[in-house]
Each structure stands twice: as structure tokens, then as C-alpha cells.
Image (cartoon, rainbow, N blue to C red; front, side, top):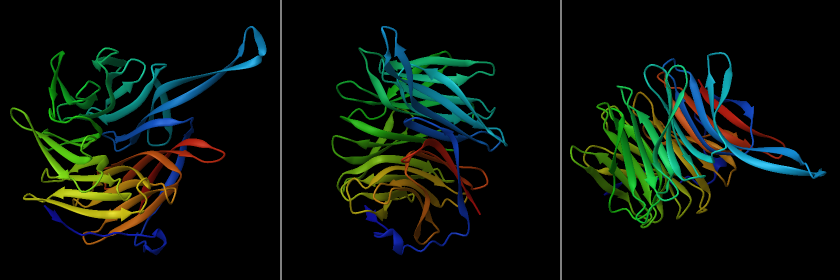
Length: 368
């Protein structure tokens, strides 16, 4: 395996910002703690954000009105932008929704897969034009599934779902719909325990999945074949593959962003058609200094990587211009990050911001 462009960029203050634009940020809604965020674009190039909020309500004890009772419930919400303003809808409440993933079909219908920690189930939620249909995919107290789940919609409008099942071997599973039935296959039967999955589809609809092997601390990749999944281990140098994300280029070749927990670094791997190339994008030097990655490719197949720098306490975007990386600050105090790129190569970012006096769901886009 080759290692390409080994760039350790220490000290954010010494990084030259070569951007010609700026990040525009806005608060969509004040929110209590958010556990998961997923941003996507509808066919009209408008952003939409699914998120799981832990909402707290208060009431008085009927036996002693001087006592306040605090109750916490989780709510799956969807924020959609209609071109002029954001609209927020409560989709599922009180079922312990802690993880979600959002995608759109070509008709503009949102599809969401989510995990409930109340009964350890994976659900598929779709807008049918008049109402939301909720379908149980897998799980239950005797057959626990989750928390990781990811959805992509193919060109025919079919939902494809990758998720984890919390059984003895913790397999990574893939589900697709055949008529009214759901067909499930095991992606990696040899994986003992895994987390942090991501999926993208090739132009022919073939799913590609990346995931972190928690048993061996490796970055793994899988692509669906005609009869079974083909799996590869991409990086084994340390604790690598944490919070991986994947995007496919115009030639259906995979590009992956992930965290090296050995040194607290953002790494980037891509397949050039013959071999995997790996480079280091940025490093804090602190094993727990980075949290979360999201990768997108522009129309020239150049990568953009969103990350959360805990040392600098800010959300950053790594931009590759074909020869070098530049780190661009997006905002301070961001968590649960998610990014998407639209058909005009504009980046859109969603994240939860928790400061000393406010909590909110934030949205940012890059304006040239």
C-alpha cells in the first residue's frame, strides 16, 4: 500500500487561508441537546436536516406543587428550507430516537432511517405524499439492532439501508426492499464489532460501505458484488477508521475521510483504480482531539472534508485544491456535524452548537 501526501499540519494559526469566499452561518432553531444530525439536498437544491433532539418538559408534582418534575423525551425532527424560510416538523416523539440518516428521491420525497434505544430497533420512515409511513426494519429487545444506520435512495427511488445488529458477532447488515418484503444480507461476516458506518452509491446503484472495525481498530471498506460483498481493510496503522465517511467520484472510485485516534488526526484515503492512497490531512497531536468527519467531492472530484477540532473548539473544513490542503474555520463549538454538496458545488453544513448561554441547530453554507 502506498502513502501519498503525508502532510501533518500542526498549529492552526500558521495555516494560510487561501479561500476567496466565506462561510455564512445561521441558527435554525434553539434546541436542547441533539444526538444526531443528517443533512441532504432535495431535487430543488434546497437543504433539509433531520435531527434527534432530547427535549425536556417540566410539570408540578400533583401531591406537592412545590416540587418540579423534569421529564426528557427524544424527538425526531425534520427541518426543510423552502427557498425563503425554514420549516420544522416533529416526526417521531417519545421513542428514544437517538440516530438518524436522511436522503431524498427524485420526486422530492424525504426518506429517513432511524434508531430507537427504547427497544433497540431500526425504522424506515418515508413521506408518501400525504403522510409518513413508518416501517420496522430490524431489532427488538430480543434481537437488538443499532445504533448505527445509514440510508441512500437509488435512481429508481428504492431505499438502501446499512446498519448494525447488536448480536454476539455484531454483524454489519444491508437491507433493500423487494416489493413489500425487505431482503437482508450480511456485509462482513468476519467482523466482530463495528461502529461508524457510511454508504454511498455508484452511478449504477451499487452500494459502497465504509466502517470502523472496533475489534482490530482498522478502517474497512465493502462493495456489493453479484453474489456477495467484497470487503477490504484499508488502513491498519494505529487506531484508524473512527467516524469514517465515504463519497464516490465520477468514475465510481471511493474517497474516504476518517479519524486516526492514535494521534488525533484527520486522514483521507482514496482508490486510484489500482491501489489505495492514504494521506494525513490535519493533526492535533491529541488522540481525542478530533471528532466526526464528513466528506464530499466537487464536480472536479476534489475532496472537501468537514471535521470537529476539539482542541481548537471549532468546526473546520479541509479543502484540497489538487496539490495541498487548506483548513478553513466554519464556526465555533459545533458537534454532530453533517455536510452535503449541491449541484452547483456549494457546501452545506449542519451542526449542533452549545455555548455558555445558548443551544441551537446551526446551518452554514460556503459563499464564493
